[in-house]
Image 1: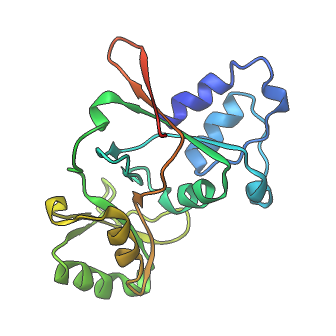
Image 2 (image 1 turned 60 degrees about the horizontal axis):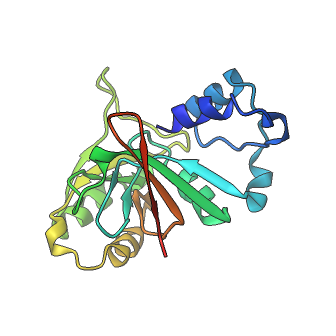
Image 3 (image 1 turned 180 degrees about the vertical axis):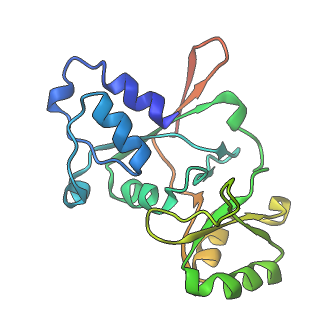
Length: 197
């Protein structure tokens, strides 16, 4: 969805006035192909709007993100932006999460973090490439895709903070910041706009 948003931005009449900070090499290539002006991370404190997708969105508008491996950079931009706009397919809006949570881990800590996640009821699995090698993020870290029984969690934000407190965890793919606008993409090509009060 994020790549589709970038391509649509390339059709914007005033795109020459936009300055964009990509979160991954893939999105950077899409932006370059779309003729968008790219700037470096020094402009992050000045970001007005982040356009993004999501892997899943629960009934309280918490999100799981990180399926593409850029969760750390995405969360940095979310924290800096004045506004975040999310667009996701309608099937990704669910009452409760069913996806594993991506957890970005420093390589030196992979074994201890895996054990800590198991101790609290998680089922962590190292993200692997098709060739059989561990997936490495653009930040040089590993990802443990970790299944949880979300029915046990009454406060997703508290769980996000709990996971992040594990030494060696760099970032967690739970996004609990309440945003302004969510676009639910329907199969017929239309969008439903969901606004947080």
